[in-house]
Image 1 (cartoon, rainbow, N blue to C red):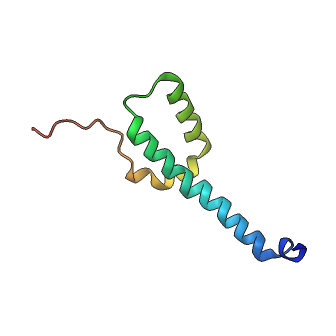
Image 2 (image 1 turned 180 degrees about the vertical axis):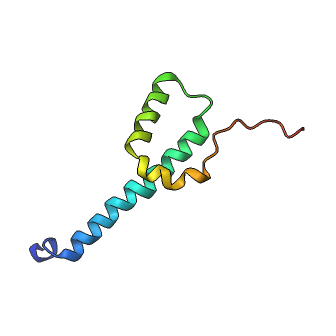
Image 3 (image 1 turned 45 degrees about the vertical axis):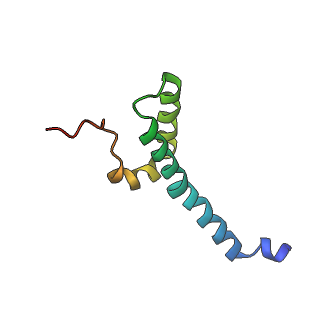
Length: 77
């Protein structure tokens, strides 16, 4: 077991897992939450979202072209 923990491959796998969670998983969950709750958030929830956006900014910037927080208006022109 000790040889596995000292293995550089295990270290590489750990780094890839942490980076993928930081850059991909949590930002996608945060974007989904913001898309569903953007127009009905309370003050404290919005403050928490702003803090999470600051914390996960590098991952959020990767997905920012796909986020649309505008109001959904009626389709009549």
